[in-house]
Image (tube, helix red, strand yellow):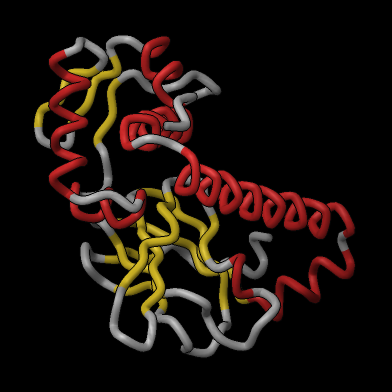
Length: 206
């Protein structure tokens, strides 16, 4: 891959990595920082559809089209590597193991979308937010160990949009979690105090 990946580049907070309906040319691997992806309908309504963290690859949902299916915006100063898709296809044709690797990545992308769909259709507001915190903990952890302390990359407004909740509900749930000793919260900095209780809360469907 090193033969086709461009050197890493910095993306400022609020800067677009790509925009919906623009020509699809590259995938992007996140070295540091975080991004949100979102789609906008004809009425101008925005729906956040993904949160991407270091190690993730953005743009996989657009590989079967000529344009990007969503827009990607940096949530903080971030570093990425660009992977030209036409060159990747040529390389994958010569290296079956690389092809299998990207099939696995695409499978994970589909699985994550299915999890979000289930989360939005079934879980209570507490269950949705507990699931989000546990997901971020797993993905931001090191060496396979979940992180107990981390910074939530998105705002409460974005959390509400992503999880289908009013921002007031998001704030109430965070306060309830803190008062009940499940978490400690300071701005966006969070410490998971009672992972077991969060896990049980994440299972609630009503």
